[in-house]
Length: 222
Image 1 (cartoon, rainbow, N blue to C red):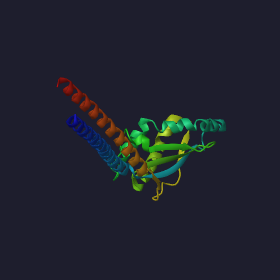
Image 2 (tube, helix red, strand yellow):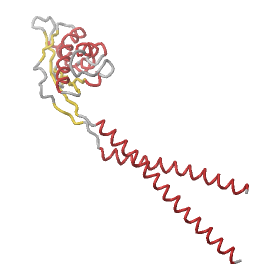
Image 3 (cartoon, rainbow, N blue to C red):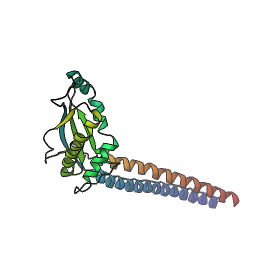
Image 4 (spheres, rainbow, N blue to C red):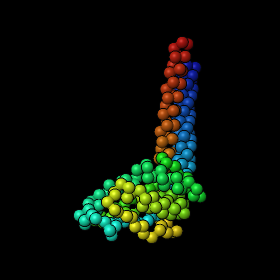
């Protein structure tokens, strides 16, 4: 009887030790997963952090002095300004801009990505449109804005007709405004660590589940 009690105590002590070892191993794996994912999130956030430069140039639509159309037609143009602005985002127009930008140093966009870098804002109640161009360098943004207005001056009259003309205002300046598109590294690192920890916990839970099932099957066979 004494030997059985001693053996039982040793077995119980061994089980408790195994339990703590498993607990520490699980914590270690979870932390490792968390650190790895946090590191990945830090690298990703650093890659995404960048400065985007915004250049602007305005133009407006006006009537030819010898036009036979009345002032009511001008009011009609004002009412159609949003439509004209949308026409400038058409692929036939942006493709022209892209073609003219191909030889510009630092230009990295194409027919698919360029439309996302351009936008046109109408001044309410007027025929003024401001072209905005965003790029990864001030020089490229400036060239894009100027090119967009040059193309608009040629393309819009084709759509509008009625003896209209485009008056281009001052070219985009060299000091294009920098827009900070940086994302929070702390938030990404925290999110990465949490995601890694959850994944690590899931992996260890699955491992323990199958390990215990395998151990139970072995004992039943014995």
